[in-house]
Image (cartoon, rainbow, N blue to C red; front, side, top):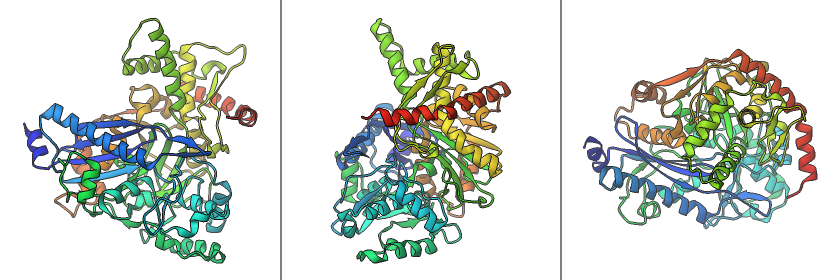
Length: 531
């Protein structure tokens, strides 16, 4: 009855996050625990060589995820969602959504998954003295300029997916600083776009005669905890076509999935870090000092508060693993055996613990798309073994799970080894860690850092953006985000910590030797096998 009262009096918050394969909506109550959730499955599509989602995909996905949440609330509590204290929108970082002065989308949405901006990324990294990865929004813009694309002269505004959805709901062209840091470099002192780099970019394109300047077409940055606008009447009808949801609700600044992952794991303080593992996998480490030099494998972004964070981002994680699990499921169904999805994953994950720690010579590549850490613009999922390799379900599963974190290991070796970044522990969340112990144990051993998984790990970034929404609606505005998370939220949640296992660590190291050596085979497959 208490939860019903919270819902009916609008004392809840909602977070909606657009992941690569799923849009998730989470409602949290006054104690910040999830009380209902909804989902919508979707997939990016490869059109004319570009990974994209259409505007219709985005709108229908938003409405479907919200309806799923509203139906869950109705089913569990017998009441409707009419208002809430705050709403937050989050999505995959980076990418490119460009609009003209009439708010018309100029080219199809180019997602973070595209690896077609190598020339621009290299040129900007050299010009800025700061690593600009291919998936960053500014790399997409500059590559379009280098390509001579006609739409560039018409740009009045460009943004990320989270910024776009927020704009449709509120009319505000803004971003949270964490998401903004994946569009253009941030000055940690001013908590705004780096003015020196803005000027360098202006000089790079000065001879083009564009009617815009880079500072004028980027979203305005809104700090965490400040209102980023109100749900308009049109926005309310867009989100909830039934007309039940009221307008006027406060929205927090839209954030990227990296920032919401930091919030969802309470890892925004120095010497903390997190790993988010789903369709992609990335690790974040909040820095105590600047890195000694520029590394193309490591991004520098920010927390939702604007503090510098080193980020190792890999495009590929669970897609290949999921494909194999679906294959096992289809085989079982062919024999008339129906097993719940969670049980299949649990049994297969657990079987991996029985396999040799080095996978017995079996190595797999989860490269569905390109992978900048290892220098690939395209990928070919592969499984490689010698005639002597051990080949059974247990070894295959261990290799598939190792593959999810192998490329991340390459980048993290630079951060933890060469740069000597110190981490007390990493907090892990996302789909890879829904099944207990196994992936957590392997990751701790791979990186040599204790890995914690919280009770709420499966809720991921949708819960994180719901927390940022609740933080915006907080009564005590003197609380900083770190204090809010420590004292109001995470004091209530338990976590399990898994230290590195020496045998697993040695086995993973041996696996990595084969993984790195056989990258030549992956390269040959990309060149020889064309879609």
